[in-house]
Length: 341
Figure 1 (tube, rainbow, N blue to C red):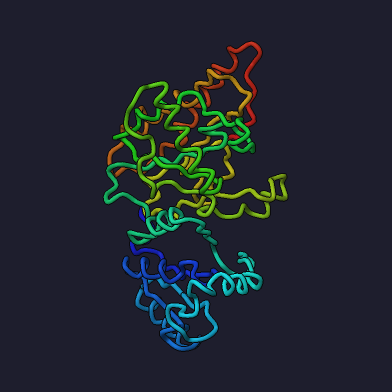
Figure 2: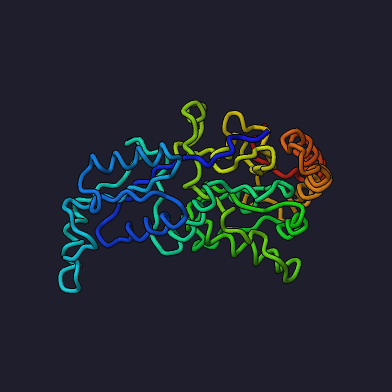
């Protein structure tokens, strides 16, 4: 069953030092249909509020660009002679944002690539569904699912790719493949080339596992885990992964993760939980092979009108049963810290 057919309404407040690129980003969003609310042009806060209300009433997303304290266009005082001193003066008064202020999400852009990815994410009405639903979407977690479950940085040389990543290539064509990780965008950007290299080392050159950057979701797309989860022993930094925020048709998207709590209430059937894999666990772990086989034999046989959520339990049980049989045959049995639902 589809969720709402109209794109979600968003209000984006740009925050940053003078000359940091806020207005440039606003112009890019304006080019894809957003309403630009700029105090330099409108004159005062009340006019900005009225413009924002009018935009939302017209079902338009709105980007608010009103950082400056006086009405001046294009920062004429920021010339080559005094720009650095002026920006430094503003920097010492800069207050970092917090969700405690009422923001639903906070996105940080530290590079042009961050900006490009953000605009691509917001483009097309903010939803990530395919143009049609004939090809469903699979989103894979990284840490513990496709890579070793570790907090070590890549520079420490301790990240490992889970055995069998090359099997994901067999899913291409039948599914759109993406990533939904709780890691930062920088970490995800570092790990994806490692996954591609691991697949190529085992299967030779071929199509990329994750060619569509719009389907690479990271920590900025997650939500803080519920208080009840943390009170029950969860970590303070745990997050959940809402799919309804990013996809209209929840019947055609599945999250594959090693932690069952990642599914938000109402989306439990959108998740397939597989055994967690750590950096010290067996190098012949068959979970990804078993997963791909189960996905193709179950979800891969469905038609474009079928709801994947009615079949995710069967896939999970098939993987869990086959993996348990493999683990039981090991001497000693392979450990698993996965929290299965």
